[in-house]
Length: 232
Image (cartoon, rainbow, N blue to C red):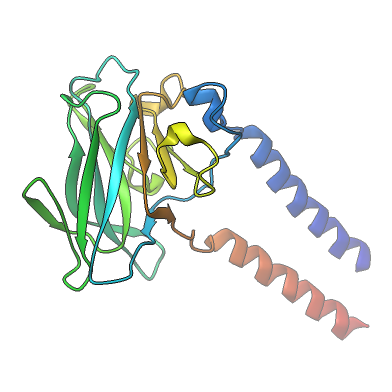
């Protein structure tokens, strides 16, 4: 029984090791260039407003880079969402931050009324809250909207990398605490994630809910352990 238990643990470790190596992603310096730090993708799917010292706070968004054929048509923004009991995600309101006319180094400020759960920019408001996802629209095909929650994407591809840059070690990031890098082609395209890169102040990666698969594996291991004790 002990050998079976150890074999199960080894199998779980190997599965996660293989999946991690198969999904190697670029560092932020690979996208923006040398000198931007070896920040790695956090795996987060949303952002969390951190400067919440009152009911009215704001966050500044910086458009660092656009290197895409659809640059003049792509738009970027944030959206509200809720997690359902089964772990699925329900979309809420959308709020556009940058349109195709925006050029690199453009900045925009989003104001948050946390009491009302409303975010506002340029006279436009939406029910967003302090935890929100990111979206990118592109005219490819008949037009697609990709979300930072991968489960919402028709192609099942993760179009967003979220980098935690809150140490502010790179001055050229203009004080951004979070950098979002995007791939705008259906199915992942060339997977260079430089089609649009946005830095955001006063926002951190939102905690990722525990995956159901991990819970199942954990329950299985606990069950095996209990069975082993019983047999002993």
